[in-house]
Image (cartoon, one colour):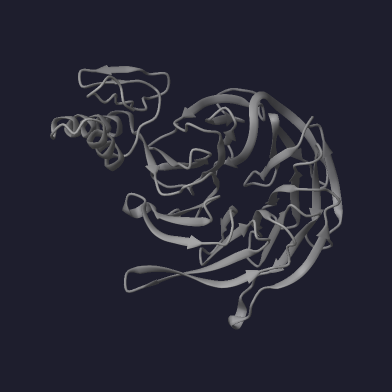
Length: 386
């Protein structure tokens, strides 16, 4: 960030509740760019020789060495970033944007871009298949694009395997079944399309079932870990519908939100589900019948919760909020009552509304990706917890 003429202010993410003042730059709990972006800011801001470059580089290295945290800014999109998704092994991150592209970033190589996948219109959703071989993207042209991922001579390649065109209008959400054999997609029309996505013997995907969603402008889909149910949230209406993936029938309707529901997500153990709407996140508990849910906790004053994501151990939920932050909510640790929702931390770095968020699979380094209306993709990294 630029300060006085000819100067650069360096902001470095500190530990929980910590603020540090270093002789070479003011550091407070805010956002920090990766080294290459910092150097570019320095060059554009002042044009001074290596001293400022070294200051910024030293600050970032101090941040990683002592606090174990840093943030990568992934530049390249030219429009709102609607969706982010990690491959199952955590080695690649995909981001979908209104600029009509999906970009794929290599987490093994400092998030170097490895592919730009073009679409005919804005791309609202992106999701990796469980085996990491197919990347699905939902487009405003009413199609789901299936991209086949391969590596040849140390080069990564994406080829368009199929375009699923049974959607009359824009596709807003795509979700793979846990076994990767089915793909659910929904959007601006009143239906959910279930596709047979086995890709056996070179065969193409086929439409398995079209579910009458009886609502308009479906916004979010989430497949239960057991593979039996689909949860859907809609832009119009204040309820969540639970669908049988086998029959296509409504198994339950969860009421309690006071406005549209634009994000839903099951915990990884399948025992709970979180949902986000305008100014609230709700936590639902699944009982033994697998069809009975109850609202066990509500977190208000969140802003519009555009997206949410659970950590692998189900202890933390990250939400993408209209207040320009990524908020981390805890739900069963540190002596608090089990299943209560409480704010652990707010990660600030976006300059626009945050529209998408996704935790990376477990690794030595914890990673959380977010995308926003500022056309940025941020990757938050920590050696421990945020």
